[in-house]
Length: 280
Image 1 (spheres, rainbow, N blue to C red):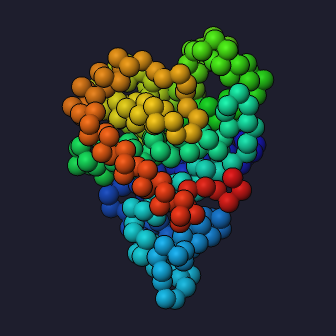
Image 2: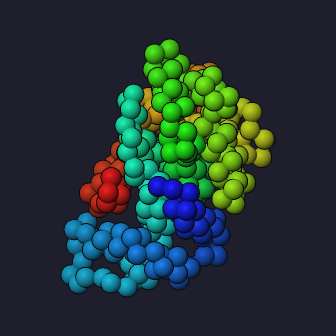
């Protein structure tokens, strides 16, 4: 994937997130984004016609598909499909691979969304998008700084340090900072920019954005603890995790209950064929 391909993905992802962020958006708005992207159209139609929905007649109309699958579910599906294209090339090394990072990102996205919905009675759309994109800085390192990235992975593994610590030693900055720069360049909502940038340091996030940064930290930590895909091993500071829970006023036992639903949702996505990119 070169910069022009990344730019193309950026255009669609930015449009989808703007639709996610706008409570006035309609099925037509979503259809207009989907139908100009053939792979995305194919994915939506594949899901709606999958055995999961057991429809008597095949669906070929995007608007009809949006109604059947559900507006929120299609928004997430569309976002998954486009973001996943960034993860599709695989240069596995030192226990890292893009598919394993993608699996981790999806789990973080689902958990962050469910925390927002269950604990705060919010839609969770920005939480979901933030979860999918929180490690996009790692992909940028893998894509454009390959030699340095290999050194980062080697340093992290041999010295038993976190990826962020190894990045600062080798590069002078970490993937959260790169991710924040990418999110800003993509003109994403400031809440997403800040939560991605502070997903390892929610205590330092500006107060207006600390809630989502804390949700992201908790979701990231919990998924790492659950061993889902590749993440920033070893685990980050347990003290930050506890402070984030206090900031959010969320009980750890509540996360245990939500975690069971995360596993069920990921299993459902696998059954629908909506979790992995066709070329993954």
